[in-house]
Image: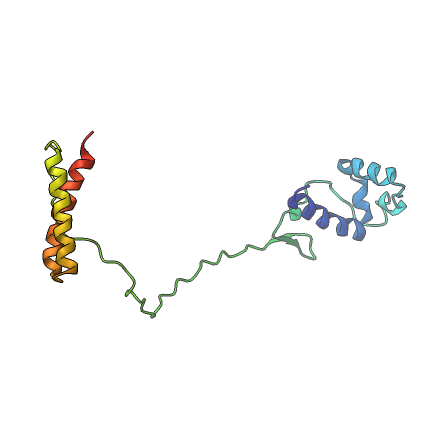
Length: 163
């Protein structure tokens, strides 16, 4: 059973308790049969239409959700107002110190992939790497070391691009 069925049953049972004559409705004979199959008894007052109210057995429009029946028997629809979430703009400033700025640098120069790598190119790459290490450790010339490493990397990338 889903929640709608349970809700409908929860609305029906109190109505039947308050007005047992509702059980005489031919549309719910199956429900009376079910109660009797469980050993229950349908009260005599359920069949006594002279003692109480007369029912037309039309669909009770107040059986639907969000409707109630007032003392006169007419239905009052209670409409639920949909509350739109209120958008509140915050005065809090966000800390953007951790935001990484986009890379707007021009593309780096790469080695020429059309050149065929030879043993001479590999040796030149290794020699540039050795010169970069000497510049870093012996002379502490970092700018010169960067230039040598750039040459070594370009030469090395050429060897990687070859089939």
